[in-house]
Length: 305
Image 1 (cartoon, rainbow, N blue to C red):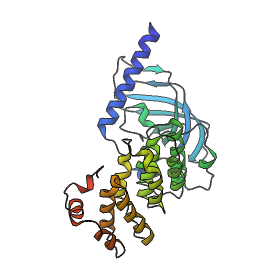
Image 2: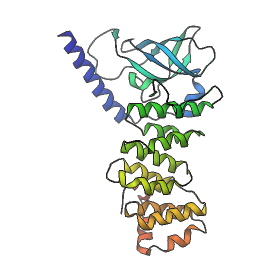
Image 3: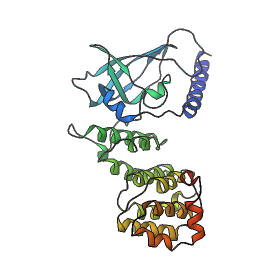
Image 4: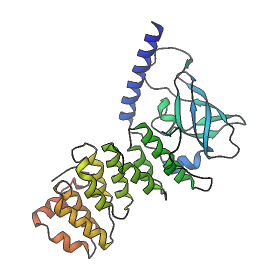
């Protein structure tokens, strides 16, 4: 009976966490987060003690991304205002394992605090980012790898290993610059999961990677019926502004041949507004140009023919 009650309790907590995370609209400033943290590590916990005011646990460190002389085990004590459905009073020991990337602030010679990274404070799942137990060869890094590259590679590998929520990577690629972004995003495009392919394309559009338009032409048929396609349409319309003549020609071809992406592509061509872009833009009927460029909600368009 106790195990049944515990299972129900944990299940309800997870549901509450999901709902609260969705409603709170949390968005961290990742640049500040990186500079504020005294240590950034990948590691696991197996149990924690938590109350409505505080949570404490020990992190078994697997990889160190930032920090000097980091011990193999870190003792964390974090004050919070716990969110979710709470059924017990006082502190309780909870044996649920977590593995991921932790951003830590040193509070004493042997104690650390944890910085919320995945959502609003007060939820255990928001105190860490996904990370893989073992990094794939393509995502491995060295001591000389820049810190932002390490974080992007670790996060991308963790998201792929978990098989869900790939858009969490966009929150990082849109705030920090990393020379390994293309590696992580291209790997997403090769995923068997449509949502990962969409996010990978969106990230490549955000960062204006060469030949991304050609890649979209190849991948679009496999995602055009998936809701995640909106990532691609929004990035194409609102972010992609590569003025290179070759890229402009590719974009114009996309606008002419792909009805699903025509509105977003025309909007991008108009925003690029270079000498090379204008002749292509003029080839589209005036009524289409006007419908795209005069819409008050153009920047919020998601999918249109």
